[in-house]
Image 1 (cartoon, rainbow, N blue to C red):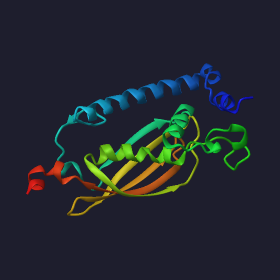
Image 2 (cartoon, rainbow, N blue to C red):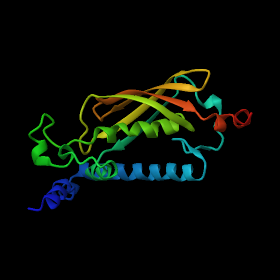
Image 3 (tube, rainbow, N blue to C red):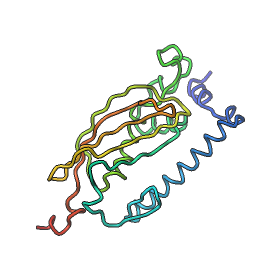
Image 4 (cartoon, rainbow, N blue to C red):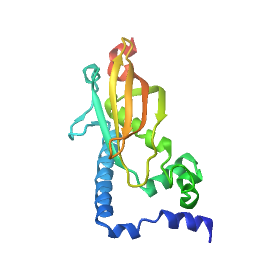
Length: 200
C-alpha cells in the first residue's frame, strides 16, 4: 500500500464519528474554533480579548500583577497533528505511524511535544498581552494522545521594576495529569504600556 495513503488511513476519524463520545468531542472542538476565531479578530482589530468577552484597547500596568492566572483548553485531534507536522516540518513516525508507534513505550501515536507546549504561547498572549518572550524552560512529563483535552495554565509569579516577569506554566490532561510544565520569562513593551515615557 502507498505509505502516504496508509498514513492518512490510520488518521481517519470517520469510523469513530458514529460514537456519541466522538460526536461530543467534535462539538467541543467546534466551540474551541469559534473562540479562537474571536480572539484572532480581536487581535487584528487592535483589541485584547478576554474570556468573558470583554475587550480592552490600551493595556495598563495594573493589568499585570503577581498571582494573575489564565487557562486555555483544547481538544487534540489527528488533524491538529497533521497541521503541526506541516508547520514544524517534524514528521517523526511516532506521531504518524500507528503500527510502529505501538511497538514503543507509548503503545501508539502521540502528539508532538512542542504542539502541546505551544499552548503556553496562547496563554501568555492573554495573561501578559503586549509582552515579548525572553526565555522558556520546559519539562515533558507525559504523552498526549488524539482525543485528549489539554488545559494550559499560566500564573505570573514575579515582576521586577523593569517589567520582566516570571510566569509558571503547566499543561494537564482531562485526568488532571501534568503533561508539560515550565517557566517563561517575558518583558513588557514599554512603548505600549508607557508610550509617553518610551518617547523620552
